[in-house]
Image (cartoon, rainbow over all chains, first blue to last red; front, top):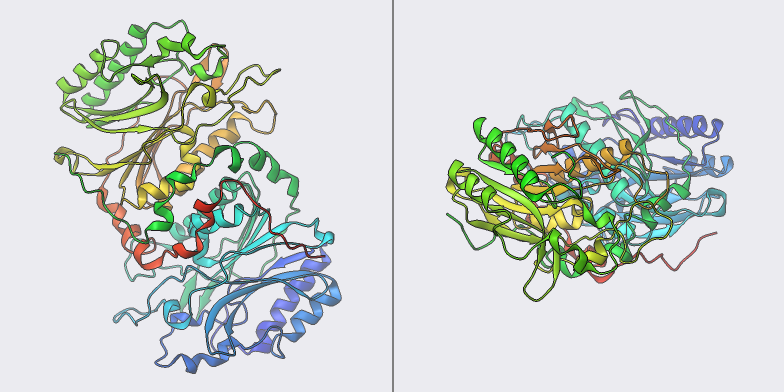
Length: 307
Length: 307
């Protein structure tokens, strides 16, 4: 998807999404992946004193009247979709969430983003913030996997959201459930989000592509990683949406920063080469040596020092 | 390094290694990375009824008279090195091991390969075997990291061997010790080691490169990944030796399947962008959701099934 401004109406954004859905259905697509926070601008770049001010960026139920036309049109076309959205629970918790909706309109799987980037507090002197730690609670559903419907070949499907795709732990927990298709939406700054100049749009697009290719390969899974791209109210987002096969090879890639469709047919049997041989986890993993992954949060330097 | 045949004498192979060391020293190198099992052919491709038949492929101490000239020449040149070798312990255990030796000839760090690929039993009908699970015990030292000497800028250094580089858990355990330089040697078949035809030399070189680039990026570390390459007694090995920076970018790459030197100067401060920001583990990791990584060995499909 191209950019969405703070001033774009929900009806306008939803209309673009339905156009994309219809274009995809026309080409025979059965599953469409929309980006993270697809219904709105990437609002965590803007500071709000009170998160309640951002209430109109959150959905209190899914579906709801503000998104119903997308769900209805998808069900009429018998097409499924992944979509990212801001979730506000009845208890007042906010999450950066995503759903996979099946071809008959039912929700197949729900996920809440675990790896929230950025900061809780506003960083003074920065033109754009990255306040996901302020707007959202950490996801509390783990990394669930479910089996998709017969029309799709019953793929084992999982989800990640944006920054999650850079964390190999997240992919591995999906792969330990034998995942065959990982759906990812993202909004990634086209500038160095820490305010420095070390990372250009080109480097950040390279990182996004590299992480998805390598994790797809190392987990023997298909992956679809989809950007909201372009300039939103002055703040740039990288593009680079990809469909990657279980060899880590790119099958389709977006070339614009606008609304654009890319397609691939995902042969799930291509996961078998990795899952049964080089990445046969039961034969080759050695978890007794992986303990620091769960026993530590941050890095701890070894005590000894050579001279 | 180029190939080594079963009939090549130890003196011949050692002479090639010393030539490489001298060429590197001449260009000002302070640390040289040699491949896995650098002193011999990749013997686990050959079946032996009794592992004792392969005794001449193993070192019973390091250094020892069969490798002493390399250690002596390196110390004289004040150059350090990583080298992979077959280890036979006094207790009769065999490991696929590697050392990092410092500029004054002392051993800084020892590692034993954790992720042994291949099979224990001979696979009938295959021209070449991959019998590492037969020849070696699984590494029992974990993934140690140590701080290098002052001459090298005191880098936090770790090691992987061959197949380890495809396992993100191994990289992460090193990065949880704040590793800044990961040294890797490999011997990777240039054909599908399972006997199929799904993987060509090109695909396998792509996988080797992809895994090192992405894991260097995701762990904000320099990585040097070094092949024994070319055709050994009819069996091809991929090349593709690389030096990768903490952005995941290739700084130097081998272009032949022969003895060849590649160089890079590793600015350790380039690790800071990742380690302090996007991959600040203390700020962003969520280990409570990573439990399956240590609680499971193999993949377990989710129980529920949608329709």
